Amino acid sequence: MLKQEHSIEVNNLTKYYGPVMAIHKVSFNVGKGEIVGFLGPNGAGKSTTMRILSGLITAKSGSAKICGIPIASSPDEIKKHIGYMAENNPLPEDMRVVEYLYYRGWLKEIPRNQLKARVEETLDLCDLNRTARRKVIANLSKGYRQRVGIADAILSEPEVIIMDEPTIGLDPHQVLMIRDLIKNLRGKMTVIISSHILSEVELYCDRVIIINQGHIVACGTSESLCKEFIKKTTYTLNLKGNTSDLDSLLKGVDPELEISSSLPDINKDYYDLELTTPNTYDLCEKILTRLYEHPKFRVREIRRKVPHLEDIFLAATRRSWNEDIPLPITKIDSRKKNNQKTVVVE
Amino acid sequence: MSHFICLLKHELRVLFIAPSTYVTSVIFLLLMGFIYILILADFTLHPHNNLPTEYFFQLYWIPVFFIVPLLTMKSIAEERRIGTLETLMTTPVTVLEIVFSKFFAAYLFYCLLWMLTLTFPLLVTLTIGSSAMTVKLLDPATLLGGYTFIAISGLLFISIGIFSSSLTRSQLVAGMLCFSILFIIILGVPALRTQSIGWLEWMVGALEYFNNFNHLEDFSRGVIDTRHIVFYFSYSTLVLGISVLITESKV
Image (cartoon, rainbow over the protein chains, first blue to last red):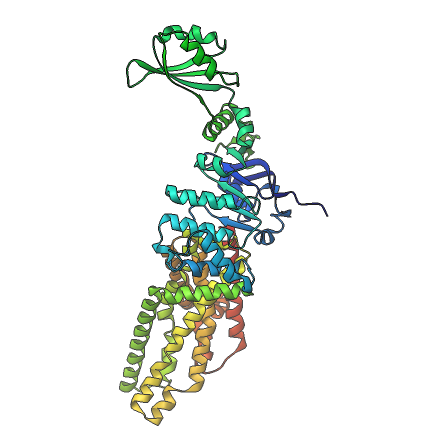
């Protein structure tokens, strides 16, 4: 028997809601034990993909497998292998936390002799045992509700965990706790998380998948995506002096170095400058040495800007808009005569 | 099966801890008690050929109109509205188990409420203590037939409530829809039957068959005919089957 390498395999997945395209030919794989961030602007198709992966809705075409099991032909079977935390984290209001977890444990077919231990362990992991164990869910704060949702997702120790916006609405302490919790799952469970908090995703995800207008526009580690999407190196410079002579001075350091913006500081004598170059090597020291040779410039700060996931996300989604994705969004409306095509854009 | 039992326990628990259930029960028992007193009062004033229990069961439709929507309107509509139906369906539970658990929970509670009305004749006979009265009020054939009809017809009424709840996210719309459908099948069909002399003559047979009061007639005399049982079982199975399909398609 072949060794199962991917926990999630998605191949050319397409879904339409009536005439409206949600996702088109989405393909990606997620390795066993990997934590993957699934990013995209609102309405990009994140939740649709996640709902298909959890067996809630069916795709129009394409295939998706969870732990090697095709979702379309065995939707009930894959539910034994996943833990799902839905967007907005819906919970029954009138149950106590511990009762809810026991109820979910029964439904998730956790053996009776292991159920108590699993519930207790999950309560401890999500820091619910001390404060919220016997509380009615309706009386819980947003943060605690999120914890209950995460506890439910990891309760049966599934091979794949799908989380739709798990850290939304949490305070920094709770975000830290959830971050540690997700980090602890690395290697044990495959986690796919959709989120808008890009700094969070950057911190705990091994890889990111960016989706826009129903298409995968980027997939890889932060470093590889940075190389692919961020073609310029940016430096920020705070200095005092006449900036009109600066351009020629900087050309001596790197002929391609340009001043992209120059704004006066709050302290009027100083300027905040942004320098860009297509070259990737670090020029901070060279710029600094050059400026020290000219006493009319007084440098207060120089910094190379490290591109964040946010920059990659913006670049990737912007590029997909600029490239004007080949409208797979075209769908022939058979009701119309003369072979007219109806173009539907999400 | 284990999922079904777990879901049923959960649904019953939800029903028993909800204050609205107790409000519904109190309203139901007050109304039925009032109807029972009115029937007894009428029996003391005028001679009647039938037993008071028969008249009592003939008015079964009055509580059905409000109790069935109140018990069932929340079941699927509310779960879909808050999204818990979605999370439920990401567990290895089938839609059939979800719909049937909700149906049986509401049905068991409906039967329990009706069983509580058995205390009315018991209380009257205990208070008055006359043996002639006991024979008339606690006639086993009428009581058995009447309660069997309530239990069998309840299958259909509750399934209609579940069906209405599966159609919408709004409890209010589900309740109103349930009331309307119950009104049509309980009072609309006999009303149409009375009008079916002219252009509706071709429908007489069907209308007679779907008239709930015709089915009640045999039961209230203590005759338990399997034809009626088959009718209600098949009718409710059809309605529940459609509810399952709707719930599955609308996640």
